[in-house]
Length: 481
Ligand code: NAD
Image 1 (cartoon, helix red, strand yellow):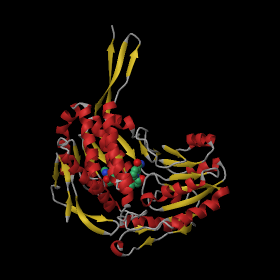
Image 2: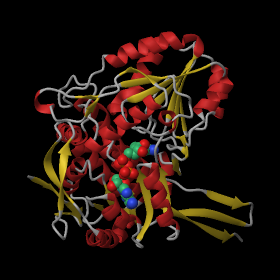
Image 3: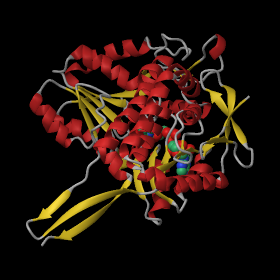
Image 4: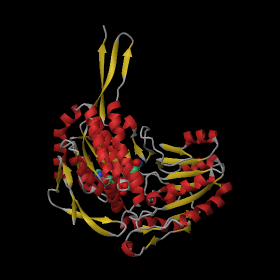
């Protein structure tokens, strides 16, 4: 069986103690490769390689660093189909999504930060004729980048690319559940002859390899995307080491439908926002808040579309809904549906796992599930389920809407459907989320700050902000005259 090893100091490197665990294909429930279970010693080796590469990488002219990032982007593009197949197989997501969203966006990450590396600038503050201050932004050193399984290559490169552009060297860890695209990225780095040690990829579990990265004294900044509970553990660990920390965490995002919206567009986008990637996107709209005057019509139309969206083999080109990431996650999703039933929720469609025929008969599938009748304080309206499960909630007034929308511990993203311009601005300011989409969903301009408030995260990634995170500002004050 194929082994998925680490990438350390420019070489594909087996873990020191030769321990592996099975890597499953969610659509079949079968292991198809083995992933390295790296330990502290492997992380030590990667950090040492990154440290020795730091001086020359950080001193390279920014054009040269940019050309390496461009070369990585070009090579991923040449291998796009291999990456898309690997991503679909590892995650269970429809191949069409991997081909058109995940992998192209990973390529864009490298291209965007290649351009940003050249454009990166700093500030000067003249004090009339007395002195001039300027801010020197120097790369912090070796940094750790840790990412989850739902958009594996896209989210990992969203961290790696700005770190490399800023002149840092990197020890990165993908999720142990989806290691394959990061492994292919290792090979790309070899092909384009990225200098050894600049990017190191450690495979393995969070509580071993991940904790060894976040706890390493020579790692100066941690950029983490994942669950809120893990984020809290990491925040506690790195606080005493005074590391820089960026956390992109969970969400419980509302899709808000007003009666004056463009109905067909709102309905179709609400379906995509609910069920794309089987509801396993941190930005998914899992609570649909509908103005009472159109509640019944919207509910019936929404359920009719959701019922038609049945899971299929993710590797088929026409598939729109694939498998969920693991057996445990499937059980977790089903247990949330059970709690919703106990709390008085009415299941309008779905509510069960699905067994497919043929190649995918042992895969982990869940039917798109729509629930109504739950108060906004109920479990299914408060906790992140991270599956193809949405709740419907009617509202009468803007005041009530804000109470429901803002009434969770999370604050990642909201999408708001209205043609009333004043209302859009008013609610845009009052909704407690890091991202507010008006009449759209998932539109991303990589120059904008990205991230959540409340329990959804800390710090902002995106644009030059992302590169600044990987630098340490130093003020130089020069007396004039
Ligand atoms: P997770 O927190 O279980 O794992 C994320 C990563 O952290 C994995 O690589 C894991 O191995 C590692 N990890 C786990 N414990 C660790 C520890 N103690 N120290 C260091 N590393 C550790 O999350 P997941 O289940 O992989 O991903 C799903 C979660 O990610 C959801 O909550 C989702 O909302 C969130 N997410 C957030 C964003 C965002 O941008 N805000 C994007 C995607 C996913």
